[in-house]
Length: 200
Ligand SMILES: CC(C)(COP(=O)(O)OP(=O)(O)OC[C@H]1O[C@@H](n2cnc3c(N)ncnc32)[C@H](O)[C@@H]1OP(=O)(O)O)[C@@H](O)C(=O)NCCC(=O)NCCS
Image (cartoon, rainbow, N blue to C red; front, side):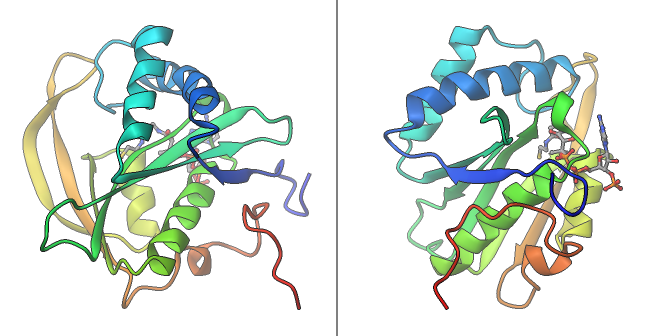
């Protein structure tokens, strides 16, 4: 346990070597997330094979960088992905997609640890603007605002919700050039760091 009483979380980047194992592990996270009612692209949970194939296709995208959060027992708890803009006018911007945490691991700071890793990477690689869209009225929308994201507006009736009704999505952005880093918004050092300690 950490000094905060929370079990430590390690955030690790998905690599070509880890992709197959990560895809299989994250299929369980995706299935449980959809089954718990989140609007992340599916209405019904996919099968394990469908979910694993979906992650593998995402990891194969040259514009995608993904991270997996693992507990101290190595279990995959959550994930986040940064999609670079493939357009010539967008070398400075990226889109945040598929932030999800297994329902059993929520409320432990896994999502902010994932976002912190993504933002650190984005800054180091020279991105200055991040965008995303998220279910209007969701917990995620509240968390993004807490982490310094700005809401642009709502697109109504954007997606079929697991309930069968249409639900809106809120478009949000964060300028990395003039916003504090995500870790500056977090209370203290809550999370095990995915980066090796810097030599003094
Ligand atoms: C939104 C989401 C990523 C947050 O992940 P997380 O790791 O639980 O985030 P945190 O640990 O910071 O917890 C956030 C809040 O959730 C609350 N919470 C929600 N469900 C909880 C649960 N089962 N147990 C404990 N806390 C829970 C916490 O109290 C916390 O609120 P607080 O910080 O005001 O105390 C996660 O709920 C999720 O995967 N949701 C479904 C997918 C989704 O909506 N993704 C965003 C797509 S754009």
